[in-house]
Length: 310
Image (tube, rainbow, N blue to C red; front, side, top):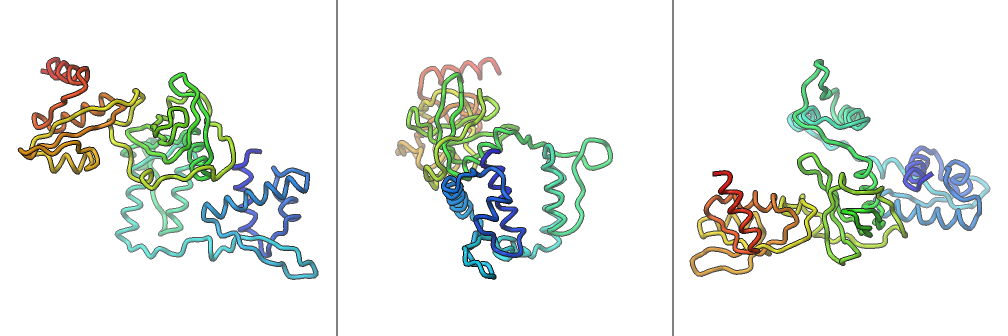
């Protein structure tokens, strides 16, 4: 049994109990722990600490009775969310979102069950002709679930990508145009990298202890921009945007990317990119108000692309 399954079973046992569970109770009810008392104690203490880091209110109590052994439980009143008090318009918006996106596997059923708890029945998106057609589909991949678990545990991952072994501290997941992306710190080159999960060449294998690293606050921002959604080696581009579009470009490309503010009001941006098509799309969004100055091969690529398009 892997650790994630053991943790899920432990959470279920600590919630679904009318009295605190002692270590002996937990060892009897939860599979996956060692029969050696010392090993069990170490593993349980690590599991308990991880659950608390993840926000589960594991409390310590002394059960009633002759035994004074310490017990553990997760009180429902501390764990379950209170009624959010959504009005009918808010509930309608959530139902609309649920029917507009189709989730693979059992996820759709879980979503519908959650929505019923919030505010009554909701239709399910399907393509069988007996319900509303989904506006989009969200693929749920095993690699995304493994990455999510590693991020929650702050556990390092090892896998193969672009034919190379990688050791990564995963920071966040993003879903963009039908693909899952994982950003994190690649320990090999010692730099932040973005990985498209359907291009990973092996299983995502967690290693080491949980809580091995801290996730920087910047990693909690929104999805990566399109010029970073690629597998190319990171390079730097210089993009000049004229004065008319400079404010909009500053907002889209980021103030930290501004390398130079010129007297005429134009801005020179320095952008790290791993996707040539993504950067090309961003630059052409400004039409003739933006110009790629470097590198030379990127500038030549965009000129050639525009000439062939014309």
